[in-house]
Length: 296
Ligand SMILES: Cc1ncc(C[n+]2csc(CCOP(=O)(O)OP(=O)(O)O)c2C)c(N)n1
Image 1 (cartoon, rainbow, N blue to C red):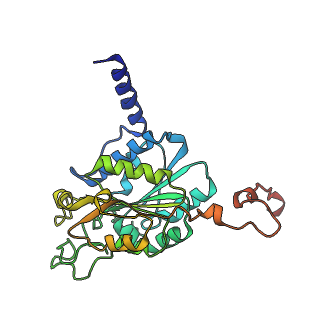
Image 2 (cartoon, rainbow, N blue to C red; image 1 turned 60 degrees about the vertical axis):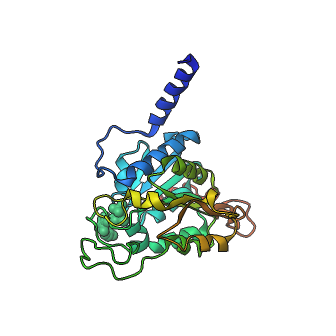
Image 3 (cartoon, rainbow, N blue to C red; image 1 turned 120 degrees about the vertical axis):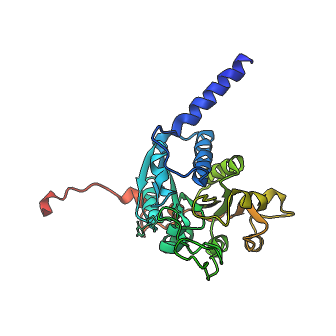
């Protein structure tokens, strides 16, 4: 093989290892979380990120246990609350890229309020929604995204409520970036991560993931048979919110992945926030250190 190709291969392999850890894996065999972290690690390298300029914020759950499977600065928050702590970090330090992760139980059963305000405020951060349609870590209870009729561990006769359509929910909040991927489609998911990393504002990236242990209704091949790429949708315009909302109605037959909606005109929170009257400073310029010993 040509020496340059070999050098390139070695360089790439070394670089892809940048975010790898040697800590043992604890996810089940076939868990979609492997694909998600793989795609993320590749995207970070391809976009030129280093460990020192990224902060990973993890919710609690199987997805949250990704915290010790990626090398870098990471926080592990409370269940359903990761977006609020990640938003604080993103607003406090614009020089780091904040990427947060949460399961469907955390995001749409425990803490949807945090998601609502993060989308509305357009905080400069990424949120990766690991959608395995159940509470995985606590052994397979139904979440508000579990399909109607699915027999779960604490609902043996089948779930009787309809699931929330997450994409439509987020699209209803005037977002600036909404994408959906599939954990078994790693190359495509890598490209979605890259686009999310370049987005200036709140990037919502939902990843449909199989949960081979607890969600038997939607195994890997169930998604593989249904997932399509947005590039194959005829005359699709990702700046048209109504086209986007129509496209995401279907959760069972043709499930489109890709950048579903993007509004490049919406300014991120730190750009949009007006200065206080008669000041030219931005929010973080006003944060200073003060001695408080005289009050103690
Ligand atoms: C406030 C709070 N509520 C509930 C729990 C218990 N709990 C821990 S993990 C978990 C399930 C996580 O499910 P999900 O958020 O969907 O993530 P997954 O494990 O599927 O990735 C629950 C209910 C907790 N730790 N804290």
